[in-house]
Image: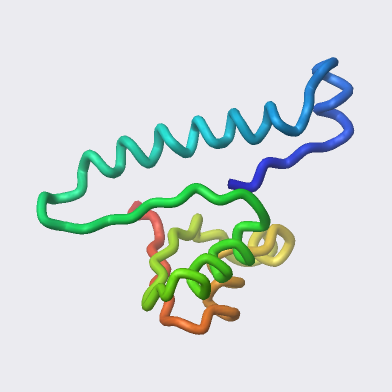
Amino acid sequence: MNPMIDYHRRQAFPGYIQDDEFKNEREKAEHVLESILDTIPDGMSVKSEIEAGNPARTIIRFADDNDVDHIVIGSHGKQGVARYLLGSVAEKVVRRSAVPVTVVRPSE
């Protein structure tokens, strides 16, 4: 999870603190993981983790620290100027990972 905090959010919500954002993002992540884990076939082993920080760096660090042998990552499929301006977590992971990476794009 990569909670973004900026000046405007703090101005719009008096009393807003960074811990609020992490709590909200963690709760959303837990909900998503629970719904996905319910679809995993019996007999398949899956480990999930929720980490905070720069997404690409955190994914690569996690893979290095946990002896991961393959990374599967989703991509929004942005192209052209949008991809250049916004950057791509998937692209950074592919370029920097020491292990193979499979990028899954959304189906149309």
